[in-house]
Amino acid sequence: MAPDTCVIVPTIREFECLRAYFENARRHGFDLDRLHVLLVTEDFCATDEMRAMLREEGVSGEVFDGTRREEWYARHGVEEYAGLIPAASHAETSFGLMYMWADERFDYGFFIDDDTLPHPDFDFFGTHFANLAYEGPIESVRSDERWVNVLYQNADEHGLYPRGYPYAAMGETVETGTTRVTNVVASQGLWTNVPDLDAVRILMDGDLRGQARTRTTADDFAGNFVAERGQYLTVCSMNLAFEREVVPAFYQLPMDDNEWNVGRFDDIWSGVFLKRATDLLDAEIVTGYPLCEHNKAPRSTFDDLNAEVPGLELNEHLWEIVDGVEPSAGSYAGAFAAMADALADGDWSAYENGAFLNHVGEYMRDWLDCLDRLAAARTAPVTADD
Image (cartoon, rainbow, N blue to C red; front, side, top):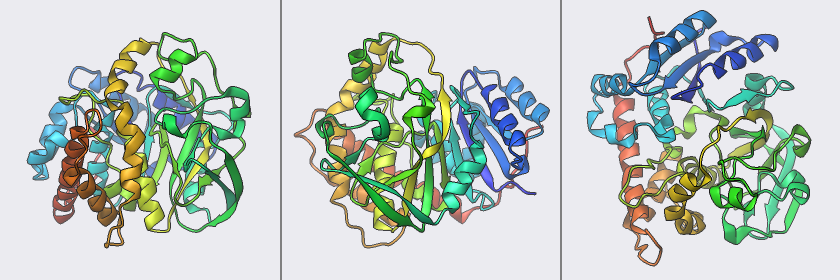
C-alpha cells in the first residue's frame, strides 16, 4: 500500500519515541504501510541514527535537517519562502505541511511531539482515523466566555487551564449538549502525565522546572467532544491528526526569532485560525481521544515565561480579531486569506507588541503564496531515505 499519511515529527532529541508508536500500531493491527514519517530536525542532530531507526522499523520516511530543507526549497522553486520555517523551533512543523502539500498522495497528516508516548489503552493511529471518519452524535461544549477549556471534563477537581487559554475567559460557565458531526477535519488527542500549561499557570502550580505539580490521568478524560460553532478552544500540536484540505489554514506561525521576542503561541494561534475556518466551512474539530503520555523534560519555568510574556496581551485579543472575519471565498485558503488581511492591515498599536500581529499577517499571506507555488509544481515523488 502506498503511503497516504504524512507523520510530521519535529525533533532534536528523543526521536526513539517513534518506536513506541510503531509498536502500538502493530499491536492494534494498524497498517504501517499507510505512513510516511517526516523527521524535521537540525544539522547538529543525529540524522544518521534517525534514518537507521526508520530502516530498522521498516517504515517509509525521510529526515530533513536544515541543509536538506534548503535543498528541498530549491528543488521545488520556493527558495524565497524559506523564511516561513524558523530553524530549531517547534514551528518548523510547517515544513511538514509544505512537504505534504507538494505531494498529492498525502490525504492526511499527523503531528507527534518527541516528548510523548502512545497511551497503552488506545489504538493511536486507528482512533485518530476513526475520529476523522466519524459521522454521528457527539458531545458539544460551550461557555458564556466563548472559550472551551479542553480539560473541562474534570476541571472541578484539578482546576487546570491549558496553554493559550485566555485569562479573561477563566471562570466560565460550561454548558454541554449533543450535536451531530458530518465533516470532521481534525482530531486532537489530549494528554496524561504532564499537562500542557503556560508558564504563569505552572508557576501558580508551584513548579519551577517547566512542568507542573498537578498531573493528569486517564480518569480526567471522558471521551470525545466538539466546541460549538462560535466557540474557541486551544489546539496543541503534540497529538493531532488532520485532513489535507485544512493545510492552507493551519500554518504553524513563526515564533522564537522576531524583534518582539514573541514565542510559544505557534500552534495555539494556528488552532484559533483553524477553528474559525472550520466554523465558516461547516466542519468540525474533534477533541479527546486518543490520549498520549506527555513526558515534558524539566527546564526553567522562567525561560518559558520570558518567551510567553511578550505575546500574552495579544493572545487575549487575537481570537476577537479572527472572529470578525467574514471571507467571501468558501475555502480554507479563502478563510485564511481573510484572516491574514485583517491582521496585516489592522492598527494594533493599542496592544503591547501589537505590530507583531501585522508581521504575522504578512507571513500568512506568504504562506498561501508558497502553497500556490507548490501546487503548481507538484512533481516530487515520496521516497524513503537511503
